[in-house]
Image 1 (tube, rainbow, N blue to C red):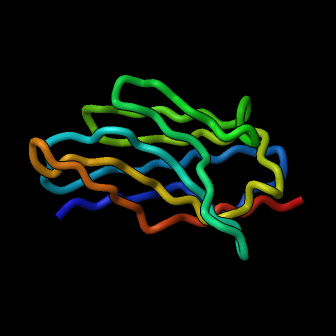
Image 2: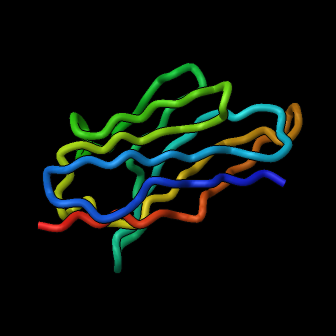
Length: 120
């Protein structure tokens, strides 16, 4: 069974930094695009950033220049370095991965979510 396990959330003051990690575990053929989404209370889930297996990245305008996504294809892990955090970044952050459980198959997986709270 494929799982995405997240870590690294918490409480930080405005201007601070946090680093999130998400590791894919279980049996699968390959991990394709990985990314992070977030959902603030009362809001819809939104894209934060994605990274392809080859390292191509996409960022939401609201986080450009502050957040950096990276991945380790050997460890099947994606990271999100968040700097210059602002209260508006407060949300539950979800890891997402497009994984091929078998050759020729693709399926979307989600992590359990990790809370990030930025105090003013």
